[in-house]
Length: 264
Image (cartoon, rainbow, N blue to C red; front, top):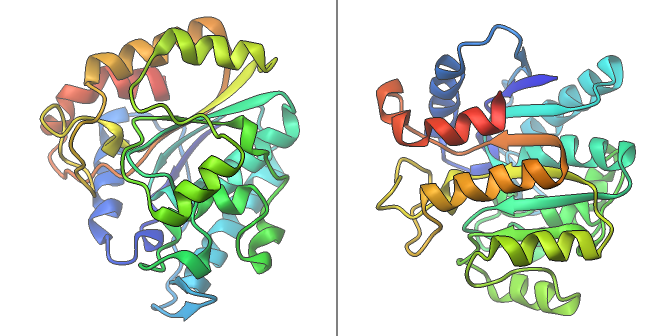
């Protein structure tokens, strides 16, 4: 199933994430994407989460869509990283031996009480672990374990996030080693994967049209090779392309191979 969900409220002020998602959808040129509507609720903050009511409404719509359609695979154009709690938890229930590959410059594993920004796109993994805001647990189909999380391109980590990563020795190498990643996944008995791809995982000198730009990321070629290898070695049941902000379709050319791999 193909989903278009330009949620931006998880980033707090990143309305340009919505426009960026629209551009990626235009580039994909595929009428099969099901559109998840955005809430018209105005900004508020509850439980230390900005735009709490809007996010809850939108994610519930996403969940209801999956309940109704019962897809076996999900490919999503978004949108901010907070939307991931729905497809990841859905596919995790369907495929208990699923690993999550988190291509991202950021750890996205804060609790609301630890977040200085109060933006939900920094909280999805903690929510998926069942350790986030308890009132959001009803949006989840299942919870994941720390051993299912594998970071690629991680290099911007809050102190509280590092503590959580260290607690369960979550896979978070400082440099991408594709062979080591594959061996780690196979050693855990993982056969299915969800590929979360926030474009800020990339080195900004390769691609910087993202909501954040963090130096020393993975190159476009490295990302392409990693995705191709994972597709060859495992069954990819879900993927996403998130937080690109350009409104010029021509500027997506450098990442066209990545988009094709994630969304084809």
